[in-house]
Structure formats: C-alpha cells, structure tokens
Image 1 (tube, rainbow, N blue to C red):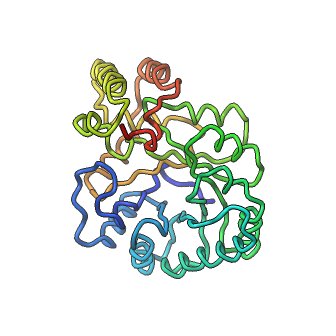
Image 2: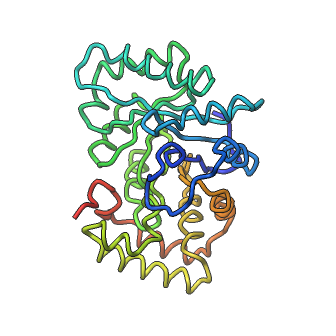
Length: 295
C-alpha cells in the first residue's frame, strides 16, 4: 500500500445517504466534482460501502477521470453464519463494487457486519482468502464495536486492517490493539462521533449518557481553550498524532470542512496538552459506540 501524504480517508456515507449522521452540511450539487476537489486538496484515500446508497457509483464517476488512482476501501454486507455459499456471495459482492467504481481491485475490503459469529466464520475466511488469490482485494479487515470483536480480529491472523472507533475522549480501543504488539493496520473511525460532538442539543436528546458526555466535553473545551486551540482542531490533531493510526476516516460533504480537517492534521499540539488529553481519553466511554446511544 502506497504511503499517503496525510492519514485522512474520506468516508463517503454522506454522499450516498443524505441524512447520515448529525452534520448540518448540505450536500454538494456535483458530487463527482466534490471528490475531484478533495483529491486535489490531498485526500488520496476513499472509504465506501454498498450500504452507502449510490456512493460507489459516484466514486466510479470520479475515478473514470483519474490517471493516478487513489486508495479505495469498500465492504461486504449481508453474510450469514455457517453458510457454505458465503465465498460465492462475497466474490459477487466485490465484483459488483468493482464494476460500479470502474476498478479491478480493492485496496482494503472490510466486512460490514461486526458480529463475532460473522468475523470468525470459516466460510467467510475462505471467501476472503479466495478474493486475495483472485487478486480482487489487496487487504481485508473488520469494522468492530466491541472488545470481544477486537480481540478476535487482532489475534486471528486472518485480517490485515481493523476499523475502530477512536476519538479525542476515548482511545481505549486503539491502546487495546497496541497491547497485542500486532502488525495489524488501524483505521480510526467516528472521530467526531458522527458529528454529534459539536451538537450539544443533539447529545441531550439522543444519548442516554448525555450528562457524562457533556461534562467531558465541557472539561475538554476548557482544556483546549487554555492552550488557545479550537476543539475541532484538537479532535483531529490529537488522533493524527497517534503513531500507529494508518488511516483516519472522516465523513464530510463540505470542501471547507475538509480543508480545515487537512489543516488540523498539520497542527502540532502542545506536549502538555497532548498528555492531558491522553489522560482523559485513556478509559473506555459507553457513548463511543453509537449502538449504545438510544435512551
């Protein structure tokens, strides 16, 4: 896998699903042009899925005009436990994705289902190995939500990548992976908790742990403010500073936000601030998993 100029991978869920997340960004009128601008600004990795509406088709239109292809990751969905048909279903799924995007190979293929029975299934393992042998994918990975799923992924020797929730208030998944001293590559997702970190009103309405989250945010904002750093800048700068993060998946449909995010990757946080954030983020938080949000 080629070295990227920055760690950002553009998540494209919002391009295919209009109401995804809590961001208030309006969608670009020309989505292909938005991707072209993103590439020119230095985004050379894109993350998608068949679950994200027509995002793969939009990426295909973007890639048809490209000479130098960026890194592309997509996913396989709709698999069943202990199904001998899984390898065939997986091959057909990847081929559909490749056809939509006008490419011959995925750089990373994730399983969109995180259930332990799926990611540990022998037929699904067979499908992943077959996809590699057919040269349809370079690497495979999981996108997990629990420590149990994390532990299996890292220790199984099947997967090359693991997508985990990592944010400025909770790096517990990241550090748990490091404890394994594994060579698995880490992709950080949900670094803004689907945008809800910047919408206190939505936090109060949507998250049953809203009081503790709002208290943590208030403490963090005061801490960043004492060092003259905006929270949005610190959110990315801190995660980008974590040495073992391979990719940071950021979903936005705004070029201005994307440029600000790229600028934040170049921001050097004060050493003392970095340590204090690290202390705040070291323990697991229940609201890091969006599946725990509902009251």
